[in-house]
Image (tube, rainbow, N blue to C red):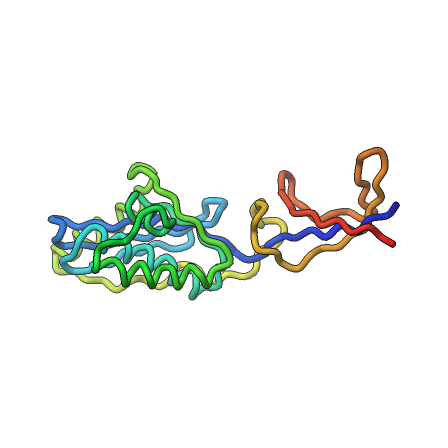
Length: 214
């Protein structure tokens, strides 16, 4: 009996952001660094900013906010963040409460921005896996010590275009559905046989919605 299959695949662009914040003295001269790349590892942009005298945790949150702002301002609906701040990662994920009065407003801003994304994740990594962002934060602090206060640089690439099937990364179940792709197939001996060719990548995961044809 013929069946109709709807394949839900998110076509929204995704980026990966490595963020870091540091303070020399805690509190002391502080800065953050943000390194952004595609899921395939291609660099998108990188920048750091000197913050004046503040704490490590404040600088870490400023880095996260900068990454969120970049994603929203440049049309990226899906963002994955890696940080070597276990505290911030667990607070954003809801595992730790935010008790610091200095961090609560930053946490609220981050959650409001996250709610505007199609998907978001944050993961704690060790510093050796966050070297680019760490280097950018330290460079901003070094420049400040030398009396140099450069503004955040403009992005190295123009606003992104919607990805094609050639460069779209594999999707996972649970992604927000995009426009479904409907095809017809015949079910025989426990196997679905599509009647048309599927525009899928090797190893790509999709969510199937099967409707019995009357």
